[in-house]
Length: 589
Image 1: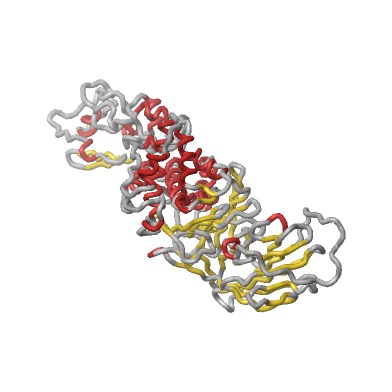
Image 2 (image 1 turned 45 degrees about the horizontal axis):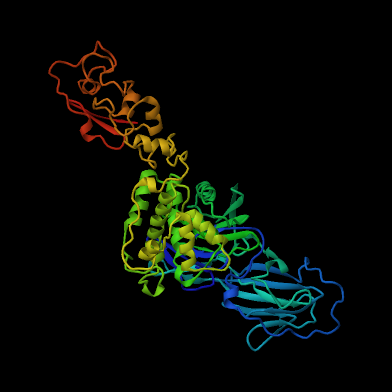
């Protein structure tokens, strides 16, 4: 959700999100990402679309020197202070250095703020503050109410918060000015190259450009795929649940997996501790950086990887028409699950959880293109994600794995103007090589269930050399052998599929030689997993083990009449239970 749209918030089943966007995405989930640079008002263009008041008349003649458009007409310096004596608020001072050709500066009547000091500004009847044209460096000081709620249902709660130890906020900073160097008004939220913003923090803190964290913190950083990732987390135990390496691993992996364009130079991820709600928020991009936060208690895993969900939002650079509003959250949800599965997070169980979510049809009667039919804000996260899974499979099948949904995503990002439903259908048709309108209408523009693929092969990376489960086998080899592409040990015998392929054992059969001993245990014991009677004494290895006798010593044979109990009847998950005549021995490997 856009950070300025209070009260909107969604969740992905057990995870809270929210999101819509204009330009670069604004969505809700919980990660604090940070970039040391400027901060601009989130959604200011939506709040103040019309030109501000007429410029204030200034004394003296305007400069006759040629305007240098490379030099900003205004420099805004913002200084943030914590106010522990007033919990729930912070203080911000906005000082402006006005250029010689600037005739007016207008600062808006921000929501959730109170002016507690001014110099060189005059308040208008509409609540806006206008430069008096005389003070060279006018300033305004604000008290900002930080605690603001959002989300839905059990996931409703604070999206921004201030406590006695720290503050996480997206403070308002928008303004407009007029200069002889340009025609019309210059808006800070739109014309970012036409002014300069300098941000200072009194004491410990970090400014990410849109999101500001005030308080003791720790920063971890990594560079991948042309992007710099910064993870900002609270110190003093508030962010102790966050595993920096694991978070940065999944974000940098996703950056390499998602080839849809629209990359910011810097992504600042913040870990948001309690009392922030479960979920997260992504703010719009500014000057090549983008911020988002994710709840500090959210772990990295499949399929509800909120860190990747929010990262996908940072890669959405499209403007969606009303009938396409579902696509923003649907694509973030689908790719959060898909990319996590391809990263091998949680192995086969992660894949099965991903498919299980796609299989559910609780929102089947909603029409994705008609928001009035949505009985819950979760429709894009559920039915929308299912529809995209089905569409991705259709595109891959039609193109022989030459194209995927990412090709459509990339075209949406590159589109000029608003993406309508008809335009989306045309882009999909180009990807599939056929007219896809009827197929799309049946799933997006009509009520009823949508079936998503359940085969793991529908979700492997198109690159046949990919190895999602890191078992040493490419996806192409796994398909040939019949092994599971997201399970490193398909038959759960304790040996990775790649090792079994090299050893000549069957990676789909836990007991290749049928001697009642799983292959992994045989390697541990020194018996052959390919020969049922390793020592060739006429007794199967499993029989010798329960006799007991030595399965690798032909001179050691079972005692006549010994009660031999099958080993394999209680074998599960890499543990063999050996039922000996008098004792039970458990071997783990």
